[in-house]
Image (cartoon, rainbow, N blue to C red; front, top):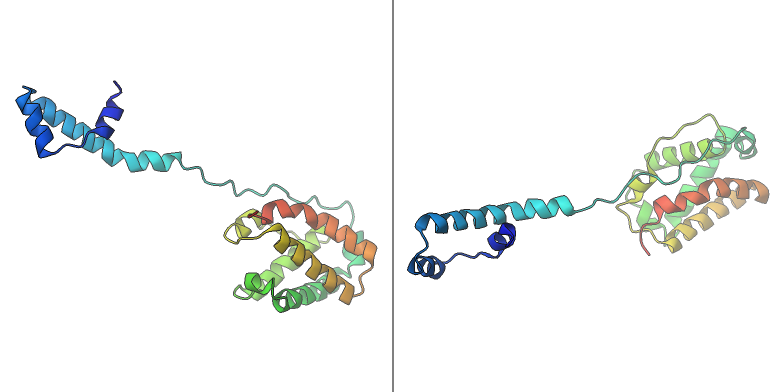
Length: 185
């Protein structure tokens, strides 16, 4: 019989010890069983903790830098992207569905990260090393939430009169990131 199973099922009590003594088991054997049971019980939580698998928080999509900066230029370069991000953030905060995700965060840092992200994926001279999966892992973001965010971004681009073809190029660069942002069904 497996000793760990015996030790985990062993629940010593006065009657168990008395019963063992009446059966003629030496005190040394009973003491050993008691110690083995206690050690197994003490080890049990740590053994179970080792079995827990933490989710992989590595991004599954890292956008490739475009071959040229034509999208960056079509979006208006740094100034155009800053304007777009400002409109986008205002839209996110004004939208009742998006506001809960953005109301209590550092707006300046989020704005900066979005500008860097849009700049990088459009071929601009920026580099962003943030991990989307890790950043969004503590938020309950559904596909519906992600789609609403895209709608708010599209509205911000419409408000800035960014041509539809240019919008689609930016969205095509950003869309695969959904795998690292959506984390609930």
